[in-house]
Length: 255
Image 1: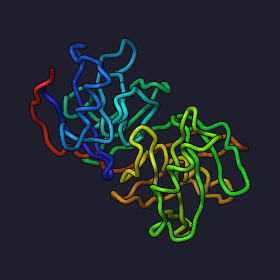
Image 2: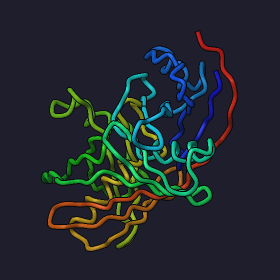
Image 3: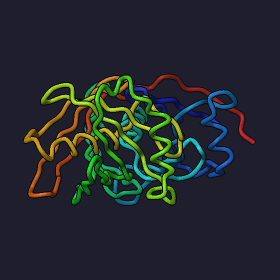
Image 4: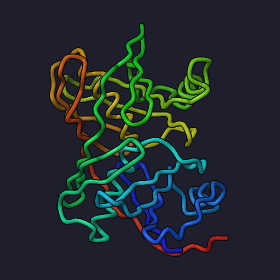
């Protein structure tokens, strides 16, 4: 089986061109392919499939082998993959589990339009919102020294969120226009180098009490940018921008 490996700010994915629908959608197989010792290695696996109304369709699986909700960096990487396959030139539209997305590509820079966010649920020291995937956002001091794995795992599995699970973001403000975000991702069950929907959730939470239309975000794997417009408590025209690169390609035996 032919595969491609892509990464977007350190969030890495196995990419399969499945327009002929030949890929066996086995949880065990996907988990094995994402395994960093016994497979290709990746935070997830993405199938590019045909779509009746748009340029293509995104089918995303977490590293545990289960189909999951939207992945922002995965979406950006899939756009780069579709461009590599010559499916579109500069601008595209595609369908994902959370609906229609627009995207633009300029070299290795991919800008992806995210779904509208109609509500941010604010609690005493954290916020919860859905940016295509559910996210918990908590602002902390010196996130670079924070124990993201231990604290994120506790929250992801606590009595409030344990049934569905939630992605957990810890955020520190660098300046009035820049954040540092670290994320514990469900399905990966570990901290990842970057999480696109998490970065988007963190930026929107920050924008609530500030009046920016864009926020730069530092992650362990690089730098991203989030743009958004606000109408009351409603966020729309939300875009996630950052690099997406093909790392390598090859063939792997599957059983």
